[in-house]
Image (cartoon, rainbow, N blue to C red):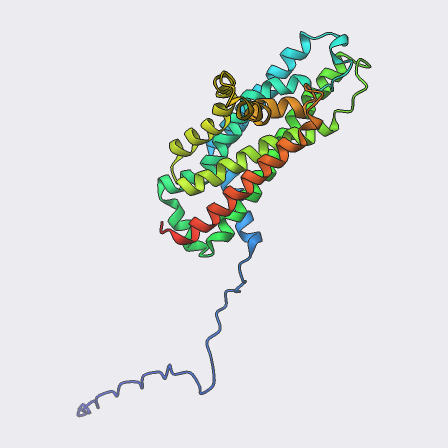
Length: 281
């Protein structure tokens, strides 16, 4: 019989040397791209088209402007359009429809503060100014396109019902009317960014729209306050839209009303950017 040979203990394999060679650096296989405003715009577009508040507010806006405009157009005669544009019926729907754009403008920013998702947004994009700029641009584009579509559709319907009754160009009313209500929505977005509270911002904007329309009736009772009441009457939202749609022949197309709203909106946007960088979330 053969004698079993003693087994020698196996030596452990040498540990691999994970140290990188001198001068070498790690390169990630994932491509790295510097972020820019385009990425923020894409993100905000995805948000605004995927939340239900956008569908409900814009749907209600279209229903009010187009629905009321159609009903008004059916109750008018050819003689009613002799010296006014065909988009006049849209004016009556915009009086209520502008509240929908104001509400959506507030919700675009305040809803993220309410749910706390704004922290995730600012973590993904630490440049806060870029986020707010993207919200403003996307909202304005959506509001303007939807408003122009609604006003233009009402104009086409009225034109079809009363063909040849009016020789007044109505393309300018589509652009200026859309711009006015869109700026109101942008102003609401800026207010929502500053207040960070949906109910508070919506209430504030309703005051901005409704108080100047109601208060002049009381101010004009006093001789000392009459001038202020008349100015407030000229520049409140309903009368501004009336001038834009040429219901007031002395309104010069609502240019001064648009200018005032643009100035106020610009100041509000500047305030929103300033507070955005100074406050924590």
